[in-house]
Image 1: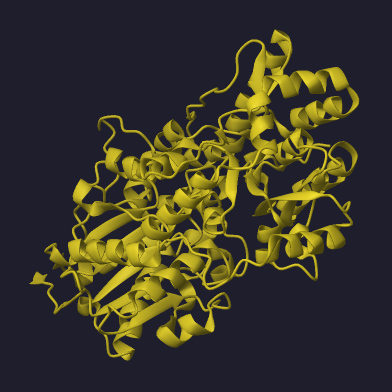
Image 2 (image 1 turned 90 degrees about the vertical axis):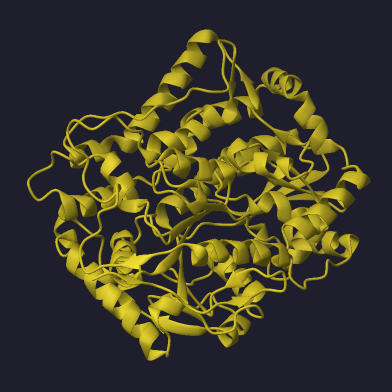
Length: 567
């Protein structure tokens, strides 16, 4: 039996219909980027939604502010948390044997939980965050069942791809897919099947991405363009007032035991591997003598902390103007840290949205950063002037040394994905693009961490080599030494405050919900029969995996996948 799903709607001031109720789903709402995005969505939509905003999670909600808790209803569905939390340990093959049953239970819990709040699935839009990241392998199956059995209208917001070097997550997706589709063996177990599992093209299921590059990945999978939407994060400093710079700088000098004439720049991140901390050390050596660079926070996971501690120990030897743990000073707040800085620095080699590229301008602070085209191109297209973003940090070398470094980078890339071959039971390779090098120069970020350490040690002991590096990167050295143009600071501050505001995000969200609501959807008692639901036939036409599509937009940098910490 097929039933048409319909519901009443309310409208924004601009006439866009939005659902009476919104359910926002994520594994947890602990402190972090996704939780902050959700809080911003709640703040921007609360006055526009006639009914309830429900936050559905596994129960770890300690990152939510009191204001958000007051403005929402929380629904705990334990099975929606990370697989490691649900299972009590890291999942192995046998843990996914009951995946179909687990998905069934989750569907029942979600529908029943909404019903217990007086809501029906028909008058609620389900807004998922990072459903395909592989932290909860059942989530894509739950989405399909909600669509096929209940005609649920759903928005799937992708912040990160498991295919973007989150190899353990992707391995779990492969294992989960095997239990659902490959009961006759491993014949169809390929990345293409993960495409079909994680990114179904189903009526009533729409996608949201942070960047145009990520939207293009979904479009190349064949998902209807009308179901893919761009939603940049909103950027705000909240109600925090920037204190006086001289007062804040005095506090930094005292806390970090810096000279009385010291100036300050800030890398406001947790120093995980993809933040490319080795390059932060290199750039700190390019600063004027009186300028010091602070990186704010240490990582919390073991492998990341090992990497960070290595760079911190090395920095004490080769980078005297680098200050670690600057965000942990007892008497200095984050906003004081930012206020003390002349500018903000970033050497990151991978970002989902790039909040750190926009937020400092709201504090009237410019940004010097490595340019990541898949992120930054959207900002420049919108009019933000990012004229101190660099594409490479040139390191000179003999042709033989350069060739060795390139081969090491390629090997690191293949090694990162090597474990997947054991799961797929077939050899397959992902395209690796060698960028930013020729036979005499190579980009510092293309080097493995071991080679980065080699370069940093040589620079610290060989003044001639350091001068050669400085000369090759004279433009970047100048950017680090000279103040930003006041007009650029004002223009960027105004544009970001307007185009990336909570109000702008609310209007974009309302339009997305409007598009979801306008689309006819059906619920059936049978299984889905969409083009993305069944395994590919052996004679089907070749198709790109999301892994290949992602790496057409992004370069690979070895620091991201280092597992044996070089010293």
